[in-house]
Image 1 (cartoon, rainbow, N blue to C red):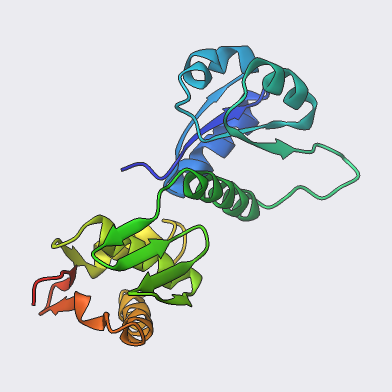
Image 2 (tube, rainbow, N blue to C red):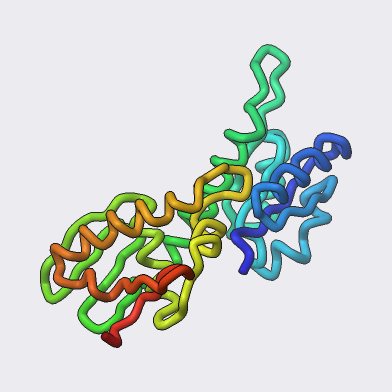
Length: 203
């Protein structure tokens, strides 16, 4: 499952290739073109989440295509370039916001999760979860009855370029369980010995 498709539009081939490689390293599906017109087929199909391009190309791109998010690069010799890491973080944030805006709330029985609002409710009671915990619960609910290893959860919740210890998953699962306990739903998260976790309504 791809985390997001990104088009890099840049007439500077070396700069374009550097951006493509960095975005791919972060786990995004990235490819590049020299001009907005070359991205027409992908953009027309609505198969692109984000377009990264110099600010002076933005007006032309937006006139041609209305749909994806745009991340503009400012090339001002008087200003320090934005670090690649910050650029990727901003891209991931825009893609995440785009996907959340189109996603329906997840439901399992009386349990309802709204990723956009960051809330979970059960039988009329509601609470707000932390950023990682809401993503973790949404992952569990999207794959009910499936055993998810800690490594799998790590790959789904954190970018590939971020170093996170496997046991960090246990910390966030613990926080999620404590939150769900307030909604009398902590039992839905089951520990699979030496393997990982499973979200199950079967006790």
